[in-house]
Image 1 (cartoon, helix red, strand yellow):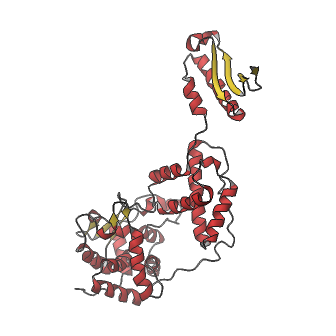
Image 2 (cartoon, one colour; image 1 turned 90 degrees about the horizontal axis):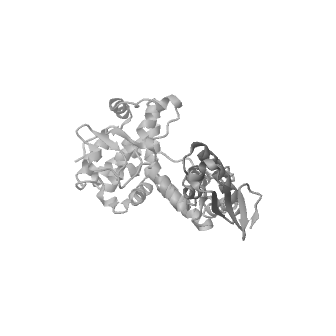
Image 3 (tube, helix red, strand yellow; image 1 turned 135 degrees about the vertical axis):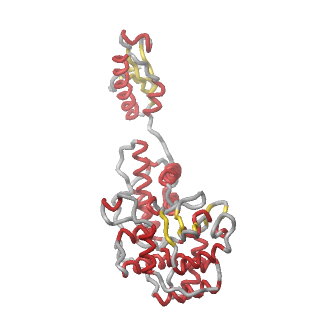
Length: 370
């Protein structure tokens, strides 16, 4: 047994021990001396010894006894796998899980599911190279990197890990130069598509006028419960439920139904079950919005030169711009993150009658569909 250079420690068979004589005023609390095993890692032993010394000094002065084993356990570095952090993050944030899940699945392929503090810059480069080899656009790559970066920032903060995030400040070559401007529907295309959808009475095609006249994300509509549809007041409530989360907290909103969107909603309700608007896409594992998207896009792409369901959302934003709707109102209708500055985040937003006014100004003329 030899004295260690770490204050109040000794070294025995390459194992550090905290070893301290107790002051007379604290003997009744701890006995004549305190000895605790710190382990063989010198850096960890030093950190634990420093914390013990600080807390014991306070304990001696206050005459309040510490649970020294609990102090030691709390001083040990906490290990959490990326999968644990991802699960905890999603539960707390209540956001759509798919972007996070896609990112971590790619990370596991090149770096495994490990303690978050063990990931390195080399892992981030390997992750980036994998995404590039798959032909992902720079925008997709940035979203995946940002997802991992957010998980690590959260994990490091919760576990008090003093380490630079290895996924931060990654440079993606030619970022943004491969961006393609998403196409939008003309008014004539919308009219033709709405007419076909309502004539067919196909549940999947009825999504076109509902999405087109509300600006909603496809998953927001496919995951609607009947309780979310208020035909008396001609309003739908976009809110999370056990089968479908929302993309962001700001996505929760209420929207008036107007024109073709209202008419298509009435038709969709005739084909619903007792709980869900589109029961075909509700399963035990959640809302299968991707299946609905694939089915709808197959028709839209063939019929309208490659345009998709998401193009309807972009089209609605353009239509609201054309009628000079306020930007904050446009953001509220679509559930977009507002760009109106700090002030735009205060208050309760526009009332339903104001939203209805602008949606009616932008809506397409309707004809009766049997």
